[in-house]
Image 1 (cartoon, each protein chain N blue to C red):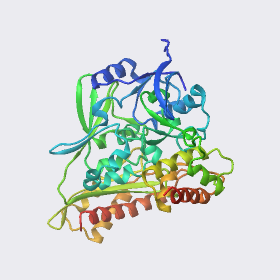
Image 2 (spheres, one colour):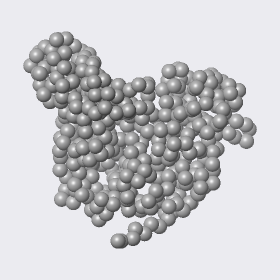
Image 3 (cartoon, rainbow over the protein chains, first blue to last red):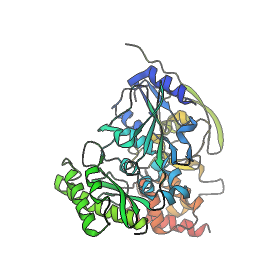
Image 4 (spheres, one colour):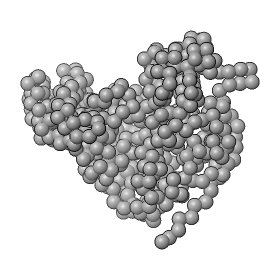
Length: 287
Length: 161
């Protein structure tokens, strides 16, 4: 690897200063499961790695009156070993429990998954359908953006020079909300999605009061398929209505053909996975 | 062009129960640190990018791919490698079971499998076959076809009861 210095700041302010000083020559290190591979592969030419895991906010998991808040560097296992997170947000757990194997889950974080901005990221669709908010630190303080604005292209995120992701906030919902994430891979474990979908539903008086669908590996970034989600809002979650939404999601998907799958295969998968994840989310809210 | 001066970093860490002070370049992996700085070579390099699990070690009670950890991150941590499994009295039950079940051929993946399986059995003494296969999904073996490995882990779990 190109020789770089290692910093392990203990506060947000200290980290911001280092990142600002080095600019594009620095990257944050959370679990390192992407950034170290890419640095070794010479995708980046770094002078500094900033290990953010010693900053308390970056690994803290807490519940406020309105949100679940977890640090951007919180490893996946912390989420899926937390009974309350499992109970309230099984859709988040779907993602946290299938990113890599156990070794990767010991280190990899949803925050890192988000900053890495891979089109096939397993964590991002789930965050989108939970209306997650990114808390970003920079030299002028903190700012928040909706998670669906974070990815700008393959490997490109919305962070400005010197900024870094501090935490992710998931709004709390009542019991009639749930979500689900499913991907298609040719193996059972440890693979990159050919196509993937997350869906969330909120139910009120037997009708879908809100819905979000997000698609992965079928575009340059994970896609918030708002136009599909909207088709079921205010309606009963019947098979026909779910079919209409799934067909729209298929239409929104704009995949490329590569070694993992053809355009037709991926689009077909999106339809099936949308149907399955909506049904799973409904099952989880008890419909 | 500004030159990026990189100095070695002093790291205090505990490896297989032994506390030590080492000097590492801040850009080398924990895998390289173990093999080339500390000089214990039981932990193997397979893919060096987090796919194969050959370099699995236990870091503060969690298995990780040591190729995806920096050596400097070992500061203050407790590390267990395959070298820490056997005792002067003999092999660890998992090592014994791997031998008896012939759960290895070329052997490169074996230290990683042993460290992973130990972490499982330390927390779950009687895992199902499905659980064993899921837990070991991050360890690849191109020789055995996995069945013998799963049998060995099952055997060790039964014998340590």
